[in-house]
Length: 427
Ligand SMILES: NC(=O)C1=CN([C@@H]2O[C@H](COP(=O)(O)OP(=O)(O)OC[C@H]3O[C@@H](n4cnc5c(N)ncnc54)[C@H](OP(=O)(O)O)[C@@H]3O)[C@@H](O)[C@H]2O)C=CC1
Ligand SMILES: O=C(O)CCC(=O)C(=O)O
Image 1: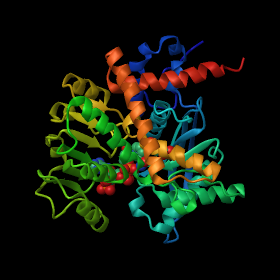
Image 2 (image 1 turned 90 degrees about the vertical axis):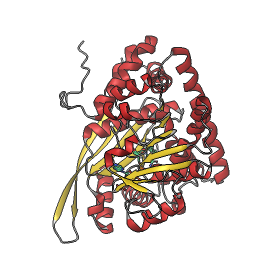
Image 3 (image 1 turned 135 degrees about the vertical axis):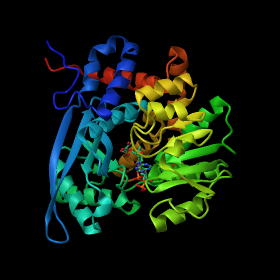
Image 4 (image 1 turned 60 degrees about the vertical axis):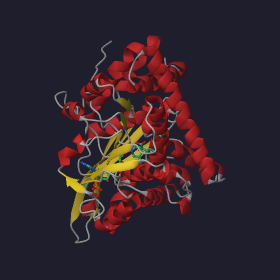
């Protein structure tokens, strides 16, 4: 029997984010004991759908966009993971994001496999009508894969509650019934959950408290630098600032703003809502060149934008104690090694940003039971799950003397492969 480490549909010379994920799997394999015989299942997505998404533009022309939905692993439950609209989306990226969802969902022990979707499009160049047509067409094209018990999309970069409402409505039109549980991250008026919008940033804060406590860093007064000021970075900034931390630097696509004494986060949110980005924020002491963001001294760094931002070069330069990965895949394996040598504590994406999918799970449960919880209940349950997950990973990391990333992969991949093994293969 031949076993191929690389799926045939990828260019072996340019694996992109999928290559990064494969290296992470290689690092966990020696710790999986007998389950390692199943490890190849982690290296192959279960199902990949590539779709052509044509829309009529407002000017009457027709434009085509490439979209994907990848179900990486379904051993523990239906697929679950967001949908990204971005001009740089590739199949390799969506494959990696779907795999990180499998690991993340198992790390916090929510009953899902991993999936992710995306369209290669710059949504800022579309009108609202065009965006709605794109979303509806995409939903129709992937409708054979998704469903409340099959695969449940959610928001990711450049998608939000409105996009989820359009996805749900398109699916309901196809199915002929109202299936609120087909997507999460919906508006509250449509079966969405209190606390979902804030959940990823809140989860980053909870694990941040756990990490800071173990590293002897006080959150009150801690200096925090954040890359990305959207759903994850923007909300994390607010929660950390409310807890007394100083948000000393924020970078988004438009620029980087700095204030030694701490930026006024509420004012920055108001400014970004008007101006479209942090560039030109009058409450900043200084602005920085893009690359200089990585030289800002901080106690905690929160990458909350895109993958592969912290490369080996960046890792050498960083002056921080703790990295909380709000983004998926922000640190390359080479950078991980350097940060380990520098004793920087990296709380990996598959743990740090799991708050979003955790409250998505709560939303899905609430939709099925048509019984909705209070925000306090949601936040208390979220906090408990994140603290327990962090504690379990920390213990494994100490026992096995591995990074928190490898420890999270040990916990999660063990759960995934135990489910795989006990289900067995069709003879
Ligand atoms: N939303 C969620 O619930 C979850 C999201 N994540 C991950 O968190 C990350 C951010 O997602 P989310 O906050 O939802 O996305 P948003 O679209 O809400 O925000 C993305 C932010 O990143 C900024 N950004 C994009 N590219 C760059 C860049 N090259 N340099 C600096 N900043 C950049 C954007 O700036 P600008 O607006 O100027 O383009 C924006 O501020 C992603 O990796 C996502 O996968 C993980 C778990 C859950
Ligand atoms: O809420 C969800 O289902 C998934 C969110 C997501 O895409 C992620 O955690 O990366």
